[in-house]
Length: 403
Ligand SMILES: [Zn+2]
Image (cartoon, rainbow, N blue to C red; front, side, top):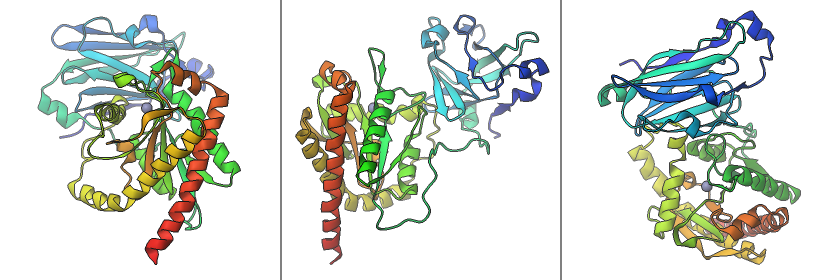
């Protein structure tokens, strides 16, 4: 069955007058004139009022049921989810924000299978204002599943921000730094501070510190954009990374979590809080509207497990190196700084990988530290020490193994 897919490029439809206006400026949302409302006969209306017409596309995803709208490009600042959601609706939640450079995304969670019945973006003749109008209609699960999927689109480039280096070189030592979350996925939010912003700052600082010491670095994102978990791992491979470090500072209310914690990959989480944290992180692709169907290949996973057996002790050694050097830099560390859980972003078979909760934003003390530039500098120095110590020890170990 043909996939339901609609890609409308409005550029041609805009009046000359509208084009003469600042075409490069982002379209802004008018919250007062936007909203989502259930109607009779299993229908739900969505209206998004924009300061100008923009190219967009609409598609649906299954498991869980979501409606995804991509725009080129919308400034969502000033819009709250509550502006769109009025009380009880078959649309249970919405998220929006930057997705990839030049693209914005809105993801609506659906309580039941619904497919777009009508889609339009009328543009005002005089003021150039546009309203994206979508009518969703209840569908049976089978029809919905058949229609779901991200449309193939040659204009849709993957979210790689940096070109791959030329040829892999054994003598190069490349650290891949992964600032957690980004774009449409803010991560933890506490008192107006967003995890995605804190971690980008932190990652850039770590990168600068390492570069000053002559260590090559690559960031999985260097801007406020969403990067899928799979892409983060792919970047590490593409640049032939020697180690992968994912940086986070989540809210974790369980057990009053506080202090830096370093996670390595495991099928079995070391405790309930770690399992909870991993489950929430692994959902970030779902939140951002990424199609995960067919991402579980049996043969591939067996091969991955084999490769992991060799990488696992190296990841553990890396985690220990971080725990030691970060404690030396003053921490504060979690009372059990080494933990294990099934984070998707750590599933790189042949690159030693750790996920560091630099602190927990749910802890007052940690949040104050994370916002403090002086504390950050000390912590980043500790991390750079950890990476260099691990590199030297690992080179020696590898030499021994080869003998
Ligand atoms: Zn996080």
